Amino acid sequence: MSATDVTRTQVGIVGAGPAGLVLGHLLHLQGIESVILEDRDRAYVEGRVRAGVLEQGTVDLLIEMGVGERLKREGLVHHGVELRFGGKGHRIPFDELTGGRGITIYGQQEVVKDLIGARLEAEAPLLFEVDDVRPAGIESDSPVLRFRHEGEERELRCEVVAGCDGYHGVCRSAVPDGAFSYRERTYPFGWLGILAEVEPSSEELIYCHHDRGFALHSMRSPEVTRLYLQCEPDEDIERWPDERIWEELHTRFTCEGWSLKEGPIVEKGVTPMRSFVSEPMQHGRLFLAGDAVHIVPATGAKGLNLAVADVRVLAEALVRWFSAGDETLLENYSETCLPRVWKAQHFAWWMTSMFHRMPDDRDGFTARLQRAELEYVCSSKAAATTLAENYVGLELEDV
Ligand code: FAD
Ligand code: PHB
Image 1 (cartoon, rainbow, N blue to C red):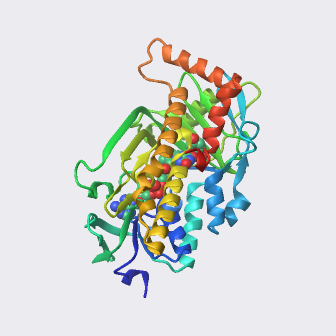
Image 2 (image 1 turned 45 degrees about the vertical axis):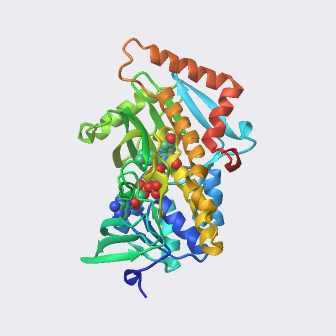
């Protein structure tokens, strides 16, 4: 039977981002059937440039799942990060402060490519370019996903629906009004991000505080640099020709004895900064995971890692339920995940608040507080450890 003929499955997964694909593969490894429905085409999903920082727990899981071969070869392991302010750099040594832990730089789209490859090799159903997905019957024990595919109206009967369809997805709105409570902050700025074909100007990431706004130096490989600039939340990318981007980056990253390498810009985009949490993360037979249920501002590099942490919990709960009929872990899904979500939310908010220029800071009071806090983080081992252990990712048993 081809993927397009399936009308019934155990877990209907909406969205082939990191959350949906990791969940699908974890279930497959345990012999549980799923169908993944994705509204975009494969090339779009594999080419979408987003996250780059993987926590150790994320890396370990991808390796355990058998999708970590390329990640092990190509991922760049970092043991520290630079905080730059007042034109000077200060290194936070993750390994010294966290008992040898670090992060791995490996693009989200590479993770997605590896997972799609594994899914197709396993011949497990993954439908791209589905339209108008409509979850129904989530309060019953046989929820349905209706959608259109290749011009035909289709219906997929499931035992459980996993909403892994990101912040703008449809699953969250399938619950009755009032079933979820939402808490959110939008920040008065966004990030303009670029990919440039040039070797990174530094071996590690640089988070830079500057009077003109935040800037971040990251990378994807020894040949590709990823850079971000704080901008207006609704910034018009047309106003940012390449020369203006480089000029602004040079200004913000100014530091004695260091220079930023320029290369052709191959990708440009603007991302708003938002914090959002829905509580709980489940209703009836619908379970939400990843950006569909929480958004963190990118300054903490936590979004992808949280998405993976959610589906790891969800997969274990589903396996227990399908294999032993024990519903306890599923019932506790939100309670298990939310403490980690809120800790990551706090860290991302803290990093965001410490680094970005606040538009209403007329007399520079907030900027002075930020400098004081940055100086403290870089001079106190306790404060540096707080940053380091959150950045590399809290151990599962700590949350
Ligand atoms: P998504 O990746 O959004 O996937 C959802 C999928 O569902 C998509 O493929 C979408 O096309 C599909 N979909 C949506 N609606 C429907 C529908 N109606 N029907 C079917 N399919 C649908 N996180 C980190 O951990 N580290 C970082 O360094 C980091 N940097 C970031 C930098 C930027 C610029 C941005 C924008 C984000 C960054 N993040 C980072 C966050 C991270 O990218 C997200 O948290 C991550 O993509 C969440 O994965 P997800 O699978 O939950 O959602
Ligand atoms: C990235 O490399 O895209 C990146 C790195 C660190 C962040 C956010 C994004 O905090």
